[in-house]
Length: 353
Figure 1 (spheres, rainbow, N blue to C red):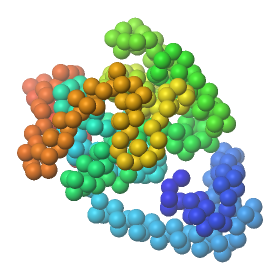
Figure 2 (tube, rainbow, N blue to C red; figure 1 turned 90 degrees about the vertical axis):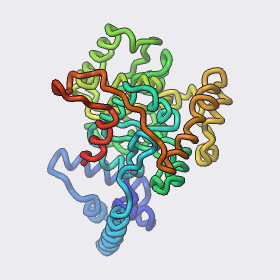
Figure 3 (spheres, one colour; figure 1 turned 180 degrees about the vertical axis):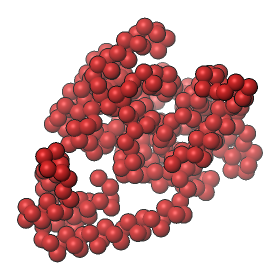
């Protein structure tokens, strides 16, 4: 629920409790199926939870907040370029409100550095519908460049918030793909128990190296199609998860929303601890992750990602030159037309509604 929504305003004014709001939302959805949609405020008034005057005051506050938000939006860039990737300047609330279909990616420093060398990864990024900032370091970088992001929207925060946002939306059902053996199934059980509904209807943990086995991938596609899930959350690590979505999304007609969620399934299953909030807020979550898994992660953070700061300095002073990759997949390119992924990424950014 957004900060400017009627429910949020009534909660802030302490005119209703969270349980009263949830009860009204359930009633609203039940009535929508039976006799059409009724405004939330009218339900609360009819049930005598709030008075008519209190509703009118809350609606007036909502109108004022929406006007302020509209004025602020006129001065904020919709996308911010960090090296060779355009990242959407969106808050968590805005993304949840707008996300009805498409591919959601959550770039961090490691992604940005991989995008300097991997044309297939960059192509997957170029064709994503939403790219939101998943890193406090990128937040600092955007301030350094003079165009700060509104908010950090990490995948490990976004996915549980998305499920909570659609807790009473029967049109949203989720399939989990990723994690070691049993992890996806445990995450499924934990999420459904927490939300008190079967929002996750399918889960599968693929074998190691599954992305190289076409037969296994097609079996996974069939499994997802059989479930008829409308949301697919893939957590097999970057850039594998983004490339897999890019390659197979056209074979998944029931899925409306694709999310690359990284280690989120491990967090949801309870097999991996998240860093303390204060470390995440300071931008040193990477230090906690090295502590938890030094053998696998020390090289990523201390060697592969360090050049980011030099490249960022180059961008600040207009000296950064994006790598140029010729497209390898010409199935969607007209004959005799030469296209680079960088140009595709810029075109995507300028044409996005």
